[in-house]
Amino acid sequence: MKLLIIILSVVLNLVSAKPLEDELKLFELNLEVPSDPDKWIYQGVLKRDGRISNGQQASNTQFPWTAELSINLNNGGLLCTASLISNKWILGARHCIADTNAVSVQASLGSADRQANRVKVFADKFVWLNSASGTNHPDIALFQLSQTVALNSYVNSVRLPAKSQASLTYEGQTITAAGWGGVGGGALSRYLQWTQFRVLSLSQCDLGIYLCSQPASGSSSLEGGDSGGPSVIYENGTPTIVGINVMVVTSGSNKYQGSTRVNRYLGFISDVTGISLRS
Image (cartoon, rainbow, N blue to C red; front, side, top):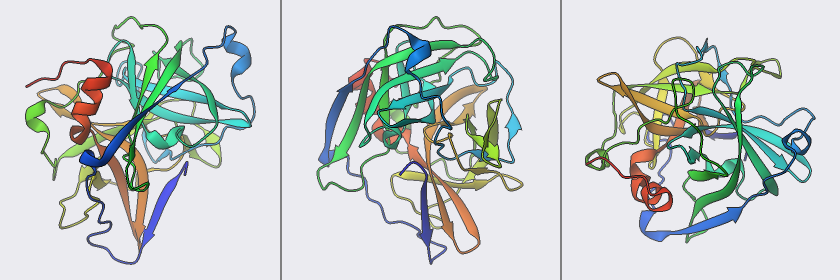
């Protein structure tokens, strides 16, 4: 499920996925923190999950909260994107390592250039939610870093929605997505990529617990390593993470982006991380 693509025969009301907040159970997995970070990581061609195609190259300080996750499996590895929400916690996608044989996870921060000298920190815990029904698990997860990171203009956390914004749909607003995925042809991008989408109304596209959006202009898309990455809005110039990019939905010739609604899970995030929420 590392690239979740849903193909549907209807254009409207694409998925009827209902919130399951009252039927969720929390799970935790302790991760290894290798003593030699240069030897643990998978050295082959990394599996990739959604990439931003037809996006733009980010500058070093444009998205300082965006982390690249290198995930070590017993039989290989994969990449995802995630977001720093404090000096100790990263917010990402459940499907990146849940139900896999993940051993360790390394987060890279601090530069929009993959070949630069980035800040690299291992996660020592992975926390996620499962639904009681065994299906429709919320695609959201938290990664606890094994050590705190210093916050500055190159490495910084992104703001969570306020409690008063828990029911917002963000309909018609422009969201900005960033990711470390590939750019086509099977190659990973050297540079962090970004693009913009417009959030659709529920009458245009109903993905239930997921934000549904389409490119604000052009033909940008999330397609490989971008899963778990942030979608943010800017409120008076301040970025707020409102979505976790997790899926691409197609219906005929139409393509839609699905992002977990962060404001639906503020209680989960705050309870696990201890982050105080704005009123």
